Image (cartoon, rainbow, N blue to C red; front, side, top):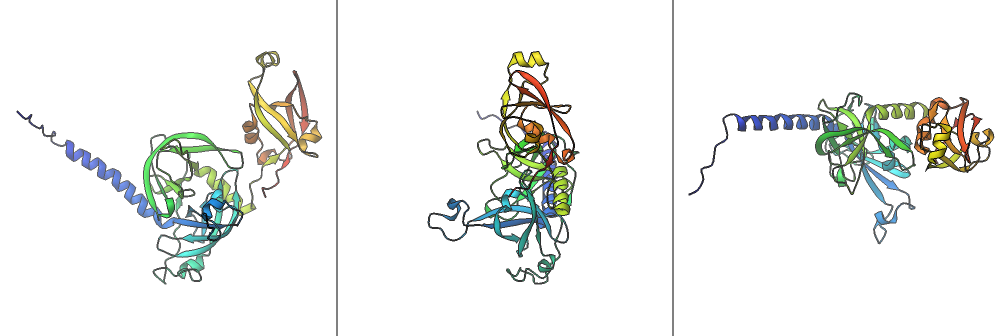
Length: 356
């Protein structure tokens, strides 16, 4: 005898449908609000770029694709540095089909952020000179609303919008998986205060916005970990806002420089105990630039830096975090281990030269 199928209790099905509708409504509303601000960026790189992108028979300069979003009415766009760096030509495609030329204002590889600009007058005329959009009387550029990443909480709903594999304005939704992560940029520095999310990212999503339920951009999508499905990262909007404002105002992010190359090394336990150190590793000096602040201060190759003024140094990444704009021109004391002996050297950091 067939078992009778039990009907769901009254109200259960309606409640589930209602909850799903509420979730869907948020995602739909966010997508409709933010998508007009999201752009696809086509970067035509120089002949020296990765030959694999050109295919086995060449076919012209390699073209990479990424995402970005408009954040000012006059055509400033925020994206990733790795999307636009070393590009000889940039083309921006808007949601309504307009295609515009763009120029790099400045980029900062250390935070993987870049600001580019399109001509707002060209945009309002439909993209004359590149390709006419579907409506010659095109509407003005629509900037996204920038939010704060400081109020994000683990488990909060977020929506990622971008152009994976060149498909216009693809939307994925997920939650904030973790806060305060660190991610290594292509320059070798660590990007701090990175947001981890399970909102799916794919190649081409880089530079697109990560948006909260209010439709405000809270982060800039930047990377995924290929072997780990669902592990995606975005640069916090508080960091991105600061970097973008400095790139626009000064053309660069000022950082301090001492002129050493180093690597993180463990310390002998007996040395840690003998010198009463608060760290079990340090930054060993593997190279020293002539005429640098470190060389002038008496730092030697083989020294292990364990303290910068009153801050313990557990490795090279700690030094990167310390050597900010505020340290330029400020005298500092380095505590180093030279063999098994602890000594102190004085130096004055200079402003770091820009990356070529």
